[in-house]
Every structure is written in structure tokens, then in C-alpha cells.
Length: 369
Image 1: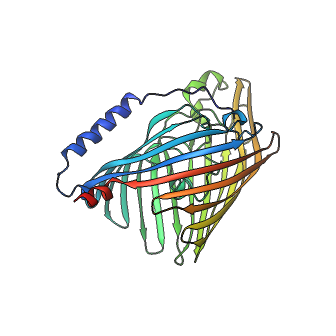
Image 2: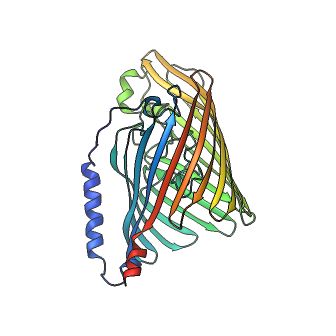
Image 3: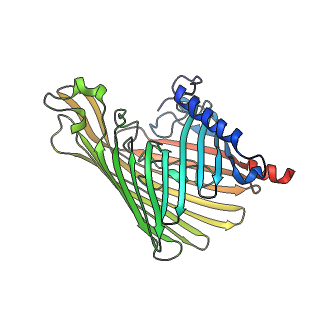
């Protein structure tokens, strides 16, 4: 996918208001023992990409070598041991970024944890469908790329979750469906239910699943919806399975997702399947290697007219292999090679190098005291 014209996109008025509210809370927090109530952590990434120009998945900077920088900031307060308010801000720019440079408020989470079996959260939360979203950041992603099944999203949501013995659960009402923005029209916010859970039979092993169903189109498409129907009549269903196994220095993560779409003018539902398998081995405290194989047979939905919509699966396979070196407690360097194979599109290759740095302002404050 070619890079679009780049320019800084301003933070929305709502984002300004939320950041201002966060600032008021920060200023009003007690001055003593700042590191006890303050949440101020971050991850800074710098990346170099060299790719060819043929791949819809891997091409960066129109096939020319390119750089990008990204900064994630978690800022907030924890006025009580069980209460926390945290905002996640993302800043990204560079020639290897296949979108406009931006400063955006990704997440805003108010979390109350009365006990282990019940965690109450509200705000802009990472989508509870699937399991990769919380692992997408460079310190927890052993590679540089990501599975392509669903774009990581932060819908407005309210969620109850927790764990009891070997079982865990989550029930959420979210504002957006779990979709890939490059395959379906932009969805409209509308409440939908997500349920999920898992079992941990032994230490180091977990198997989980999640499910959601609801509309995935928008009112803007109403002129293209066949007469007698509304955009809310066309539903999407996602059933996702995930698993992880950790034994000694070996770690495995995997997901298998099934999806079904009602598409205007298409008889029957359009279905798709996506999966990935990821393995990591830590050879020494500072050195590890990892590999990920994925397939995405994702439904592609596009309106052409009121009488004709496209609804078909777009299939590809892709793999990534790389190594990581921990330069110190906070700094991680990775290099990886990626390749994809499309059924009906040109294939591509890419080499990426990433340097990431984690920091916690509370540690800096603690050292000064």
C-alpha cells in the first residue's frame, strides 16, 4: 500500500478536553511520594525499513528505504490502590509510515479493581476481540510486524473482567466492530456486545476464546443499501480462539479467527478465516529469536452501487523471522525479514530494524529522592 501524503494531524477538541482533564487530575494529586500516585511511562521506537514496491502488506515508502519514529506515552494517576486513570497517547511520523504523521489519543482507561475476580473498566479500551492487541508494543512483540487479521482499535467501551482460580472472563459493550480498515468500509459507532474468556489448566498454558456480533457498516452508506433494508440489517460475526504456551525458554502464541459478513446484494454470508502461529526462544538473558507465520483469508467488502457490492475473501500467507538483543534493562534492538504470498496480488519482501527504549518517570523521581 503506497504511503499517503504526509502532514501533522491536530489532536481533536475532544482529545484536548480529555488531556486537560488528565492535567487537572495530575495537578491535584498529592505532592508527597509522587511515584506512588503518578503513572508516567513510555516506549520510544525508531525503525528502518527496506522493502520492494509490490506488496499491499509490506511495502513502505513506495519501495524506497525509509525511517519512522513512534512514541507511546501512558500518563495518569492512581489516587487509590485499586483505582487508576490512564491515557495512552501515540505520536508517529516518518517516510516509512504508511499513513499521515499524527498525534492521537489512543486510549483512555478508568479502572477500578475491587478484587481479583472483578475489574471494572470504562473509556477507550483496546478491543477485547482476540489477544494480540495488548502485545503489539515493541517490548512485548518479539518481532517488528503484526498479524494482519484485525487492526488494533481502541473503541469506547465498558468492560467487566476478572479471574477465578483457573478461569478468566471478560464482558464488554464496545462502540466499534473488530474489522480491518483496509478491507471493509469505515464503520459507524454503535453499541455491540463482546464476550470472552479462557482457562489456564497449568502454569504457562492458556486457551481462550472471544465472540462478537453486530452491524459493521455506517449510515453514510444508506444511499447504496438496497431498498427495503437499512445499514444496521447487515451484521458481522467474529469468533476468535487464542492460546499460549510457555515452557522454560520457549514461548508460543497463536490465534484462529473466523468471521462472517452479511453483504448487500450478495446471497448468503461472506466468510473468512485468519490465523497466526508465533514462537520465541530466549537463548540467553540478552538474546532471543522469533518467527511468525500467518494466513489471512479476510472478507473484502466494497459498495459499487445500490445494485452491486463486492463481497469476497482476499487470501494471502506471510512469514516473519528475526532476532532481538537486549542492550540494557531499557533498550531493545531487533532485526527481522518478512515475506508475503498473495493469491491475486504481487508478493513482497521487507527487512526492518527496530530500536526501542522503555522508561518510567517514577523511577527517575525515586532516584532523585
